[in-house]
Image 1 (cartoon, rainbow, N blue to C red):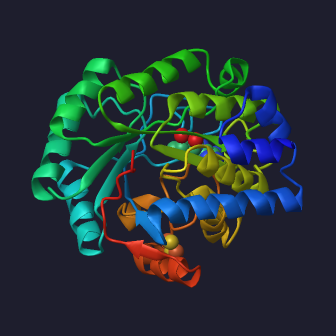
Image 2 (cartoon, rainbow, N blue to C red; image 1 turned 90 degrees about the horizontal axis):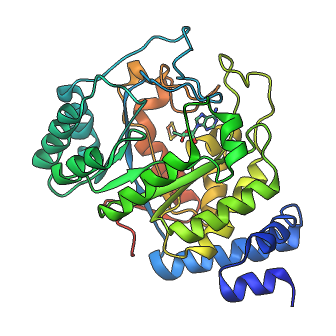
Length: 345
Ligand code: 5AD
Ligand code: FES
């Protein structure tokens, strides 16, 4: 029995076996088999639905200095901005009218938003839009902070683990950041009843297939409800300005593997994928993804939230993301739905 058959049958493998599986990422027949299985599983659980999350990038201040990220603390070449509670609610109002039923508050780790300010924002959104889910993506916090946000009404939390390999993690981040902290945060979030999203970049400097095999084992253990996977893309004001971007094909391969491993997972076709390939998000859907996350941030701020170069949906066309994605998703044979889109388990 080949490793492919074994994976198709068991939906789970050991680290060594995942490595063997990953070594087939450029083999057209394997790619096809996996993507067909991934699409079949997604159809079984979610039909032809594609879920949307309205992304509100509410602050680009960040106390962290991750080597890959365009809004890292040391980048003095970008204008910094913060949205106040009223502006955030305005984004939600626009989003609600466009059919969004999940709002993702994403930002750098910005101490201006104290726990009580954050809780207040969450409560306001839940009060005004009780039928919507609130997702937070604001980095590493204490158990107590996560608890407070949960009690204020937050439903979900996105915190990519970035890589499950200690030494790769250390090479991508300054000394003060530790993989162990990240892991602990993810387990804390699970314990508090959040729907949790982990994830990683494909192709940051130094990443090998061995590292990705570890990511897959980590996801298998954590069993998150969401997994964000996108190609690494260099940003001109970072340490990795001259590095090569990650592969679209390998990203698609991993999306299929993750869909098969966690059949009910919420899997976004990421903006980074759409940045690397004009139809990257459509390809993501055809590899097993079932979520898109259009930008709802005020158009005037979008250019300032460039985690990587050439990020799409930051120009004048940006007000139209909902319409644009609706057409794209339909042209690809799917249906963009007006639902909260909770994971099935
Ligand atoms: N290229 C691609 N993705 C990036 N992220 C941060 N910087 C980059 C980059 N240069 C991703 C990280 C982070 C998420 C919000 O964006 O994985 O968790
Ligand atoms: Fe933003 Fe197409 S999705 S312009």
